[in-house]
Length: 183
Ligand SMILES: O=P(O)(O)OC[C@@H](O)[C@H]1O[C@@H](OP(=O)(O)O)[C@@H](O)[C@@H](O)[C@@H]1O
Ligand SMILES: [Mg+2]
Ligand SMILES: [Zn+2]
Image (cartoon, rainbow, N blue to C red):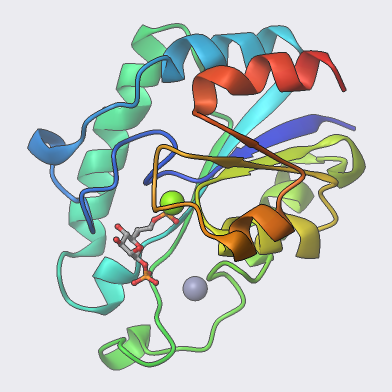
């Protein structure tokens, strides 16, 4: 069985300017590629799990998301990092338009995206790690059975509920490899 680092996107990989959907607005957080290279060296798969309710809200389309994601995936590949999976939730239970208005199982804090990835990639949750910038990311990790849930300070303002749900709080993804080395 494999172990994985589940990565939230906005606020962890890139600066969360709010519903980012264009290459021009996609600003990488410093040290993200080096951190991901370190995860790979430590034997982890890397799986992105991102809530994209901007799709449900009609701010951008699934095609816009795919275009940006393909560009991001190539950026990682150029740096020697093969992302093992990228999962997204396009829904919102109240603000969604049409088919996107759903109380789905994939929107974090629910664990659907992590569980789907785990089935497909044969991931052992008990050895895996979640990295996010919100309490709901920590809750999704815990609901999936991930024991190490790391909150970073590069995204949404860290609040008490996030701190309470997290195993550890670090400044950014650049600090995560040393946390994993100590596990
Ligand atoms: O951090 P991840 O999961 O990768 O993506 C979150 C984003 O899709 C957006 O999620 C929204 O939350 P709501 O979906 O409106 O609750 C807001 O927080 C936006 O500012 C943010 O850009
Ligand atoms: Mg986030
Ligand atoms: Zn969903």
